[in-house]
Length: 259
Image (cartoon, rainbow, N blue to C red; front, side, top):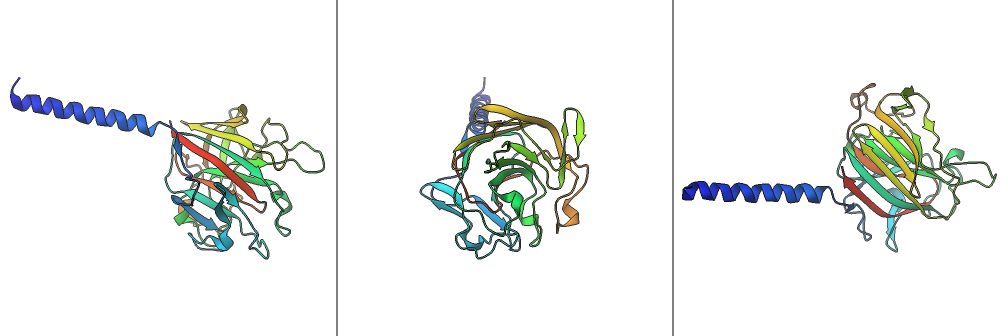
């Protein structure tokens, strides 16, 4: 082997090793929240421009990512979302959440002890100022109410989207999971696995819902740019966002692994 060929061979081995190391790193668990600030995230709140964290809605306190309304006078349908700045296609997301504090008195009744994580969302920069919800799929988080009725968490909701459930197109806005009703002030572990059109939602280590093939469609989004909504278009990647819907909630241990 000539010296030139030897050098090329060594160079190629170095490149292959670097690529293998990068692939390995990309498929390890990565923390999305540094516990100190909102670096790497973008806020979009209804009635406000992208990047305007109105009334310090999303904040970091005591190492927790919190949604708080102590600087609000009225809620005024100011539904908000905090987007991680990198889109994902196939992934395993896990986090812990807990509802706390007092519900905003003028928020919609359904938002009591209600929040969630959105995935396959449109980019925050494409969301108009007066658009109420992002076109996305939601893993919905709920806590039980004082009426004692069953209220599972880890449900699916579909603003501007639709899914297949048990082989049939599911046209309703939300789909209940099989989880038990969990209490307010209780820390809950949630996991979301999305791979090649298959979606699995897990609460406290138990699979509570599975469905397939998210796509644009349905309704329940107002004020969007028609250029970004194509009914029937399969969703294969997008942004992940934590929701502000009227009840204080806090998050921790937010991690993701590319699949």
